Amino acid sequence: MSIAEIGREATFGAGGSEPYAHALRREGRLQLVRDAGAVIDSYDLGRWMADADAVDRALLAAEAGPVLDIGCGPGRMVAAAVDLGFVALGVDVSRAAVKVARRAGLPVLARSVFDRLPREGHWKTALLIDGNIGIGGDPAALLARCAELLDRRGAVVVEAQSDDSVDDVFTASVRDDEGRTSSTFPWAEVGSEALTRHAHRAGLELDDVWRADGRVFCRLTPTRR
Ligand SMILES: C[S@@+](CC[C@H](N)C(=O)[O-])C[C@H]1O[C@@H](n2cnc3c(N)ncnc32)[C@H](O)[C@@H]1O
Image (cartoon, rainbow, N blue to C red; front, side):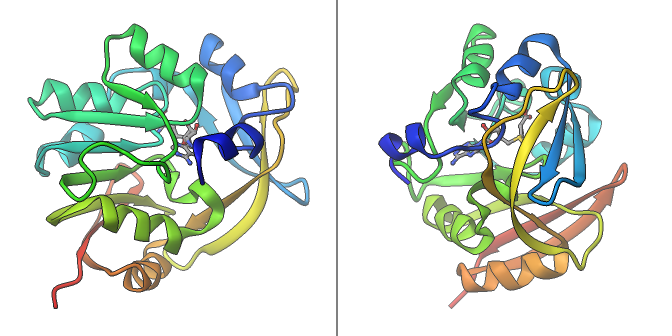
């Protein structure tokens, strides 16, 4: 996906009455709504805007820099990585989110993960946190892109669905608590079992899986030949 296409193609929470941009200003809640109208997830923007919590920080502390946070939003993981002394960069297509992160002095780029990025092939850690494995609605393609970005001794840390068996690609929209709705966009939800399969297709393998505070994380590394 090129930068020109992002302007035309809807991404998470964008388009329509721009609920994501509004929620970032108010620290409100957002619901992820499936094509058929069912609410399937709910996000607290207050959490995304707050400092990284103990679980976020522990996962970063176990990894190496440089760290690339894909779909960084307002940037709490980038801030935590910088605090831990890592070289870090966030990328996000939401100009509203990037604006919030830059205001806090964080290193972030308003760019799609599928666009050309700095240090391609040299990132030691790539993050797909807070459901970001959904980006683009094609988990194997997203993981293949992560594999291109990673150093051969690097790892991608993915936050998976708590139900290990979930493997779902769908059209979604986002709605805020004041009724604003985004355009529809492709999204995915993936549990640890399906993630292992998608990773395999992308040239990655499961190195570790752990649960913390009700969240599930998978560490994927380039397949050894
Ligand atoms: C579920 S939200 C996660 C927010 C974030 N992790 C945080 O802490 O605020 C998904 C994020 O991915 C971003 N995004 C969607 N498509 C993207 C793409 N192609 N490249 C980079 N970021 C993208 C959205 O703008 C949004 O900020």
